[in-house]
Image (tube, rainbow, N blue to C red):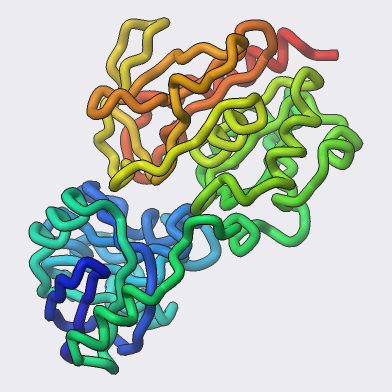
Length: 360
């Protein structure tokens, strides 16, 4: 089935649809991971986005339920150069095209993903329209240009849980309250493996409600979109500062920065992939990390109470915050990976050390 991909800059690509057809609008981004497409599809941080995979062959190991990072895919569209329809993997339960069709996600193959990625790198992330229904290039470009975009939109509210839930090991050492702005399942698993009982609560949970659950520490999760509209999350974070150890990742890192007085800015094309190099100053190591974010903390806006323990080696982006006096820290990357390397996994252990040290 013929399909069109139209960017707001006027560029149009022709490809073939996978499974069922349809039409959608979204923010066009690219991901440089070679594997992990299922984790990318089900990462709530991609809500509202159309994801292009830069690796040329996608789907060769199929799909398995154990690799889902949430209850369903959150991308609006999924683009690739070539899709494998006959996966080879003993864990696979279905092919990628069957998975996309089951969840009504419009997938498109056969486009020039190198050129599309180049356009996004040159022009920055932009609105896009993809369709099997409207095959008129001018019409599709007009739809992309008319889309209002994700800036200023509260996307976390769309993906957060609606009721609290608990995950725990036997004989947990700590109780962590995880504020869900789009939390991935492997984050919860990592905290459980570190000896934590994890109570995951909705994004709009207040500081008083968090403290009423008697936590040893508070975790601020990843999530999609622009952090600035999340006034409720920023206020909750402000209300928790100085009361319990706090660990934030990705969107949680950005919310923490805003709560402490830092400023945020929109990256041109973001960091999305499993090969981002980060310099960690305390250990004098280079960490290869998994990332998915389009916003960053402005280094020159940090208050005196914060220091920068890590930076991205590609563009010098702030990759973490550390409070000089309080047990508060954050990381921009995804230490839980899924997909990606585990070079920053030690941060979960550091979080438990802070909770042990500051136990009340």
